[in-house]
Length: 91
Image 1 (cartoon, rainbow, N blue to C red):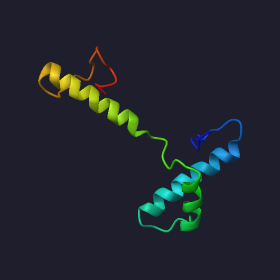
Image 2 (cartoon, rainbow, N blue to C red; image 1 turned 90 degrees about the horizontal axis):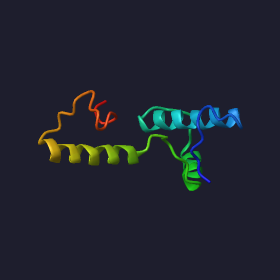
Image 3 (tube, rainbow, N blue to C red; image 1 turned 45 degrees about the horizontal axis):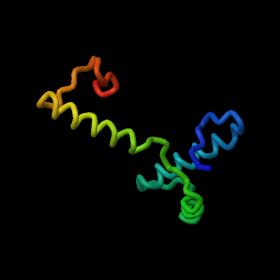
């Protein structure tokens, strides 16, 4: 299993909302503000592999590789907004 619970978790909406709240509190806490999330709670969540963000670095890494490939092919990194070969890269 994993801890990638979405905010709108249909099987358990209360859990989805709770997890979302923990992520928000953590973001506030790491920004140097009080959030109500204790270091002990953070430790417990880290212990089970809690994912503080659902945004994956995998997509960043793969886009970077695609950009390098584009640069090798075209000699620059000015990807057209409507790049038909890879539309996601142009956005």
